[in-house]
Image 1 (cartoon, rainbow over the protein chains, first blue to last red):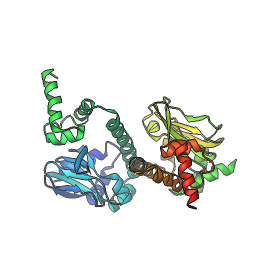
Image 2: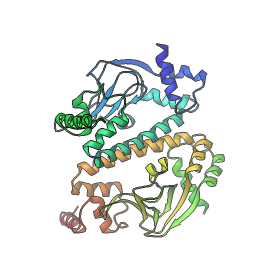
Image 3: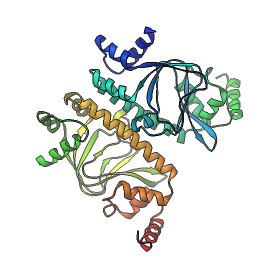
Image 4: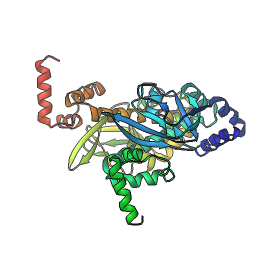
Length: 196
Length: 196
């Protein structure tokens, strides 16, 4: 639908000016993709060839460590999804990006993203602002992982993803907080008791 | 000296095209600064207001953790120096950047860097490529810190900074490798014995 591209262009306009006559470039360079719930946008071992814009649905990012899944991020509607490290270097990912719900995306491959940077008037600026944002976001995420207690991590989850509490399975929330599902139930029960 | 600006422009040209008539913009936006050995380019608690280009000299990056210095990076001739996180967000740094030798820099402040991005034909592209590079570099550094043994970290130091072995004090190398100076001496003695 046309509306999906309008949503994408609107999101790009949070960063830069996109002239009306440039909208066709975005149409041309992004294509549709659907990923069913529990299927993968990216699997460890594969190179990340696409940046995706989430039109509908929800994805999670995780790493496998000794057979344990560590969820560390989510992408929902109107956000971009990518393993930027694998994408930039075009080397195999160590991370998984998996759909939690049936997810509809507009995706752009590496070559076309370079075209977008070159063909939009402010394309390079868009790339710079996104890269800067991802840089800062990653450092803040890392600080959060190393400094926060389980309770604080749960607060971080609620604050960072206020609309996802009902949509993310509890074992995934627990893996994000870095605790067992039982411990998460305990935290939630305590808070319910305290009328949070 | 004119030669210092030529060196800077030459380095920028590793990333983007700078037309001859654009060289004056670079001259105008970067200014000279000298930092004596053991003085600071940036101290924890201060906001990083400048990106520096090292003309001559050497700087190290470290964090203080429970009174212990953890050196995690160096900037030598023809490299840029900055706490990019503090600079981008204009919030206080948790990192120190200290001159190991008397260091001459060309520095640009936040406002002027935005001007550089806007006024050079490929300024935004320069900003994008630098941000992407720093993003990937930081992730690789993190992986190295968490996965490598002391022996491997020492190899990483030698590989990453092949010309700095004679210029960096041993206690700083030890703090980069993450071991005590005595343990570093042991590693070096073992290697000398094996004719590495």
